[in-house]
Length: 260
Length: 309
Image (cartoon, rainbow over all chains, first blue to last red; front, top):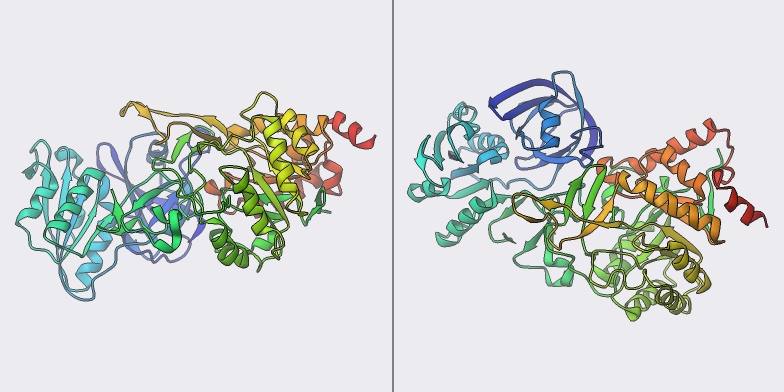
């Protein structure tokens, strides 16, 4: 982890309100899937704190992208960046997805803008010889992100939308019903993560991992802002162990490590 | 540039410290730079027993800063003495232990535990956290503040700094009570109580409702309080609140602070503290000062007159 300046080299718009910024880093990066960067999102007046973003696609050791939906002043600032613009990035941060020891049937579940950490994960899993399926959920067809990019990796992609405008009509987690899996990797809204957790508990499917999001100020462990309740606190820590930091102990947790 | 800074009995190699609560116990920052570059480190609040902190959400973004309601989550005195303090001893910087408690006995027990430990330069009493139920108990009443300082004073000869709250009518009154009870210095300020509302969810953003404002938005509030403390009291002051640059630090020195502590800036720029040390040296030179001491209260003639009496 270290702070440095990165440069925008390409700006893509995969959906009307979504932007993918391809950025050039000063040195080779080797982040794990699920790790994230704190990006500066403005001049500090309206948007003081940096914001956490999982990296999305990896084009070369120095070239990573970030995918986001424009929802507020921070993401509006990022969406306004153009090639050659510079921004501060601190990372890579946190604990990413643990990879299996060998080939497995891996299922990735993304809700909305939860797809970024799963793209590079899919690539790593394919490299291990895994059979990879991605399930993408969103409110509606135009909000389904990452489908062509994941299909380009050569994996099976199924979709679900709340309004039925693309794929299955209903929650993306309903697609899990008919799918055999050894490992389950999820990133998305809290409701979706809870549903994945419940499936992990019911099957049971111990190799289920959830990438969490939380409001955080620093991203590197000192602000203690991104607390999430631990399911089994370490007794040695006493009351201090009630909460884990999403930024350091996470953002990826095994399904039974946290209460969400 | 002579960067040495004296705060009462405390001598710092430069006047830039890291503020309590935004630096943990130094371990994360030490991955990024040598902590020996810092004048001092004010560690995250230490309580007698481990404290869990507040439930989520603890952080909100606001223009010019942030809101936090961490609730003093900390691993407790024993962990501090066995794990965190030994780590900090590796660095050539002054370690100030920030002490928190739910009641007088809680404060006293931590001070007793810290007193006599090698590597502790001083104690900062945190009587001003707005994010725990009894956090402001001692900071809003001069009698209670003075009584607590007096009790702690009996337990230790270490330099004693009291961190003041801006959430009072007159911080000078509280500061005067702390001085009378034996405090060596004041640090000003802790966060200002504030709130943000989540319009969609129709509730405050922060889980417990209110929270502390920090960041650049806090600087004018803090500067005014530092200025008033310096011109009305004889006790040295450490300025805290929205310090982002060497120039901000110089403003505090000129207002009457003997040293400063950098807090929320480390979230936006993890390298802010050593950067501010370097910037301050340049700013001092640009203003024609040869030493930190020369800039002290340069903008506060009443404070200078008081000192020369």
